[in-house]
Each structure stands twice: as structure tokens, then as C-alpha cells.
Image (cartoon, rainbow, N blue to C red):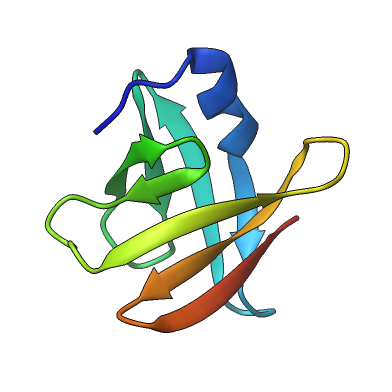
Length: 90
């Protein structure tokens, strides 16, 4: 894991959707992010690099954040063993 500035972690906070019924809320908790989905336990997300996160105990999954031309976070791609799931920031 790599430490990122609090201000950068705050840029990732918000609600993301993969579909109309599948949403994930990210919030900063100290030096890392926590992802929460309805009906599931919260999951810690740690930074591997700028815009790249991983969940401990899930070594083959990465969240790769995307940004608009102005630098704002627009969503992320969740890469799971070669399969990409696209999440868009609401």
C-alpha cells in the first residue's frame, strides 16, 4: 500500500453505479477508502498508485480510476482476473 494525501483520497469519495440497481459508495476513512454496497460488509481499499487501488485479501482485483480532461474523477474500472467492470460516478 502507498499513502496518498487526504485531499486526493477525498476526490474518490462519492457514489458510483455499474447499473441502475448496482451502486457503491466510497468514503475516506483516515488514510484509506472504504467501499460500501447495500447488503454487503464494508471493504477497505488501499492505494497501490495514484488512481489505482486494491482490496486486501483480493489479490487479483484492482480499481483503476478514470478522470475527465479537467482532472475530476469520473468513475473507475474494476479489473477482476482479466474482466473489466465499469463504474460511473454519479
